[in-house]
Length: 235
Image: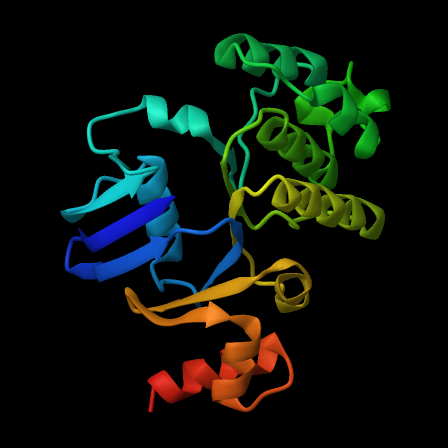
């Protein structure tokens, strides 16, 4: 599904990615973890074509993505911060995205799942942060694609909506999709992820299952395992 070879990215004097090699060839849920500044956002945005690497290559479904854009039709993406047009109503935004994508959509079921019907005719500027995140989720999941990228998907969600999100992610996994998730909420990661990729200072320091991570760090939870691997790499 995804193959990354020798990926480098530098901003000024700051080397953000330092020769990252990564291959994801099986469906499942992969959590991309790391402290702030570790390079995970740059890695995700490179896959999306939003950041152009200095060196290296990225292939999706065995096709190089450089100077291409149609591959993005095979990606469902949820950004960490959704900057919606303030003057639009929720209903208008959903229709606009559907018109742009020209693909079959699942928006009605998602609107029902996240209780957005009362908000469809409200302007986006009037919505709370949590409600905006629900709209963000609907936009990300209403099209069917083999690759799903979720950047901090739990942000602002209440407990009921968080349960709905977990159910939704589980449904996508059952369709044998590849799902990349970034999150600072380790309990959420432990509940949903199959594998962990841990980035630090632009390099991958761990790539494996949750059980393997716990085993090599001798820790009982993902939270403590991640803390342990971070300390070890700074020794």
